[in-house]
Image (cartoon, rainbow, N blue to C red; front, side):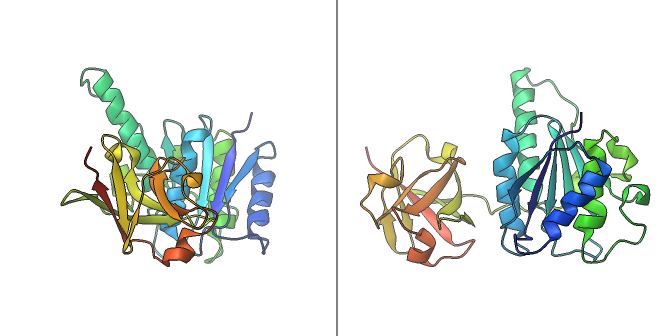
Length: 279
């Protein structure tokens, strides 16, 4: 049985690009089910792709092939890659879009080692550069549409059960491009993170994980405003902002019934401060 393939791109739904990639997949692996994670990533926004793929990744069955094509470097010397993880495969450009998933896998491996009294466990990530043209759609791929000519075929072949190492030359996973947000910074009476993603509703997702604020009450200082800690949107009056832990596990800033982005007009990377509250 063919493996499930997910697709995440910045192609939108106006043009035929996503449909063409699905056609290529169907030619190679007709039985592969496909799920569209999103095609509304802002153009060339690799950081947004990183966030969305990492958010979706834990909810798919083992063996899933995740095809990500947000590729501002298409046609340049950036590597076309496929990665095998303990839970499936990642296919796309080597531009940091997979680093959120790989960070999750590193955390799982570390947790596994800790649960086994510190016993060492082997690395479970393997990667190849997609250099074997036998598994491309064309020996002369387009310089502007590797999603069609290289990535979709690779994903389909993996879904068909083709071993990873057939697709190209092995590469050291440690050499993969990493795209990590800046680390949390301690400040007087709290900590500082940044905005890492703005969703369809205008909610602002920060780089502050739930674990970082789990031990004590807090409030958020942001864009010259002080926001209360809540559990959900409706705990403040309509039109008022609040901060809480979203379903994705990160501290989120929202406005009840409206858009926090429109309210604050912020940009990715803008600072967000959590201030501890006295008991």
